[in-house]
Image (cartoon, helix red, strand yellow):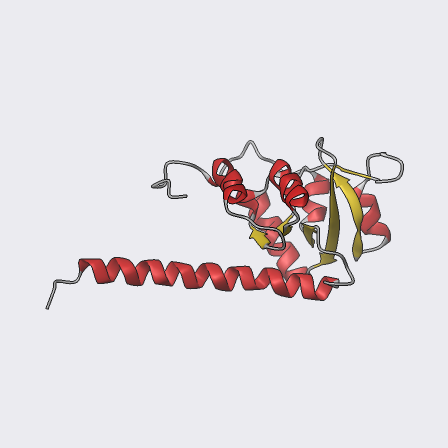
Length: 178
């Protein structure tokens, strides 16, 4: 659905529901993160993979109790399990994998020097920048964590390819006819 850049990614997140089919895989970046849409994708039998947005609460699927992600990751730096996400209680698989110290420190530096000074990161936020966290509804027997991270990296390649096609198309439209 074309919007001529008048809608932000969050508003456009639901557009996928008009074209998705059972069995499709939707790769999302943080701009399109919407638990309501993920819930609907679950209902439609489609699959998704997204980086996890900071501030989402997770709950134990058996007890309904809120999980302390920081405490879980301190106890086991690699985490992979089914949880309920957000107020919507969307059933998702949460996968967290530590990143290299250099990357974690760069993320923390950027967070501390964000141009919006009102967004001072909490100690928990700074700690969580040391992990890549993803949510999906694809089971671990289909996608072990390493495969999940590999698939998500493909999203960047696809996005870069689409951007180069857009630039080529724009260039082609501006060239005079021969």
